[in-house]
Structures are given as C-alpha cells and as structure tokens.
Image (cartoon, rainbow, N blue to C red; front, side):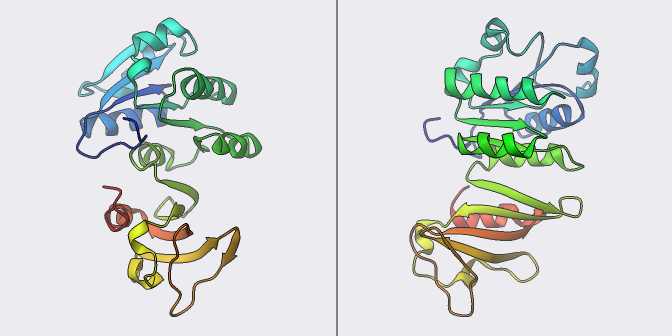
Length: 227
C-alpha cells in the first residue's frame, strides 16, 4: 500500500513480533478484523496465548533473523508491530522494518521515553506498556493518521494529535466537536499553539490536539475521511 494507510475494507499483511500479553491480544484482534497476521516468537509455548480460534500464522524464531522475517512475508508487509519485553529488540526490529524493508507502518513498544520520542520522529509509532497497550497497538496500525499522545483512566479518554483534514479548512472548530465525545483542545499553526475559542476556524496545515473518548475514534475517523 503506497500511502502507508490501512484501508478498512482491505485484507493487509501484519507481522507481530512477540507473543506476550500485548502481542497476543493485538494479533487476535487484528486477525478477527480479517487482516493477514503472522506472529513471531522464540518461545513455542508463547503461542498458546493465541488460543485455538486464531486464524493467523505462528512462526517460531528470532525476529531479527532475516530468514525468519522473510518467511513471515516482510517484503510485502503493510505493518510490523514489535512488542517483545526488550526495548532493544523492539528498536532493532523496527529499524530493520522501516529502513531495510520500507514497511509503511511500524509500531514498537518502548519504555524509554527519550528513545521513544526519537523514533517517533523517524516514523516509528511508539507506546509504553499499560493496561490498554494491546488496544493502542490496534489503533496505531489501523489508524496511522493519528498519533496518540496521552491516555486517561484505563484508556477510555485519549488525547491525539492529527493533521486537520483539508475539507475542514475555513470551517469552525466546533464542526468536529461532539459534546461529551470529541473536543479540540488546541491547534498548532505555523509552529505556534493556540487555544480555540468561540468562532475559531481551522486553516490548511493546522495540527489539532483532540480529546476523544475511545468509542468515538471511528466517528472522528469518518469526519476526517480516514475511513
């Protein structure tokens, strides 16, 4: 997929590196969404977490081994998710996917906030371990247009950063707000952050920081034309 976006109606190929709690849950959810999923793990017993209904492929081996990655189909992969317990393994897997195989969407679990910020700048979506880690993995893979900055509670409320859709240029900020569901917290325009007030309108190129409840992410996606 040349634009790096996962089309909702398409069956795409996703590699999940690490079959721990987060990786196994994310793999099951993505497989249920009818994506093609391959899970890589060195420990054969880890695959038991996938359950008997998992429709994807299980591949035992070291995820940094080129032969293993090739067997997993990385050369035609649309996304790679690195969620092992080690930051270093996740970082290297993410770099190989992004720099060597040019995988459009790369997600990595990274507990070091400084390294996480560096890799986000290079196009690797990162997150840290939490109760809602698996659901965030799915969001990062299926909604590559948005970058989640913070979560509140158990992930029920999200703060995301997204470029404002072109069709909203010149329209009031309130056009994307839904009481109790979606609110624009701030706008970054030409590098300067502003707090929207009554009558504030979007301009082309604006970056919006939006508070949205998790169940309304699909609604926001439809507004912005991401799905």
